[in-house]
Length: 403
Image (cartoon, rainbow, N blue to C red; front, side):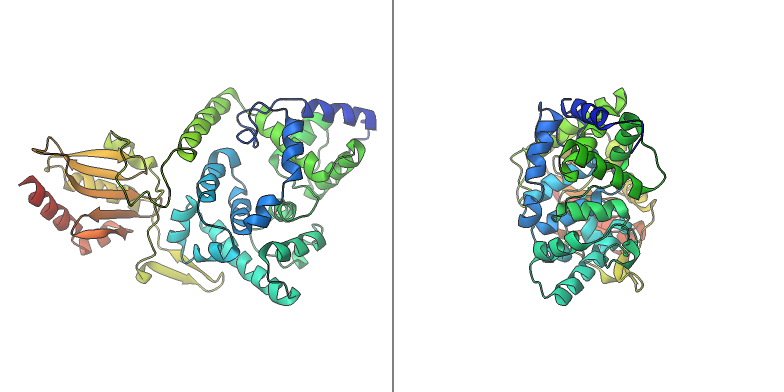
């Protein structure tokens, strides 16, 4: 800690942070809108491990996905969605890691690195259960968290997993029962700007928070949360604040709508609107398709995971193929609330008629042509579409209902 700051100064600075209001970009804003940072963090830190005890699989997924990402913008909306599902245990999580495609659609992120970490982490946890003689998911992680030493990551079964840095290591420990702190960006920023503490070593930042926690007589976990929520709320530009507010409102609409994630593909959604086909690049999929073609997989023996063949240009090429190949058809494209794109007849004689529907992820496109491809089929390249004679199936359906 900065030697120029005495205990009184530290208490005053920390007290000022506690008295600030949560901002829309603060991590706890959605849980405690309008509350002071201190009050929100006090309430949250008292139940910090509650969800991990009830849904260890969800918490494990959340921790890994949040590493090196903006949690409020990029992770929280997906975790809120998954929270509505019957998804609790490490076994539930393992069932979502059958392959990268299935995992990506489930968690809403196409990230091989995080997929690999989760697969390897689940394997290590299984080994810990066998070694410790513990069967419970939370219990085995709690035992590990309270004994783990952040100063010796290389010799720790979890800390030695490639891709798990000290911040993720500490974040896991916090969620599974350890009173500690994670040296992430926000914690460091607050220590730099408010306490004038600067170091090139993450362990020094952990020690600094531990020292502050002793001075203010609070848990290290609570101090961590105050720093994280102050930093994420007050160290953002005006443009970032505006963007976060928009994201928050959009996430609220999705989270609290009456659309059931599990039944979203079982009924027709009423809310839809016409979009320009050029805007479809950012569409993501909420529905989940089961893993299909094993020929699309490459097995990576070193990491013990499956990796989908991926070309970043494939998605745009497939969309272009679908739209350009159907230009001669009298179609309009409509974006549905669940992310699906419906190709419908323009000015149908009797009622709106669906020729085909497709769902886009960052690595694949799933297409449904009722009666011809039903349920939908997933493609990873234009070549696969051509091999499956997809265009002929679309034309056949179009001629059937347009004629």
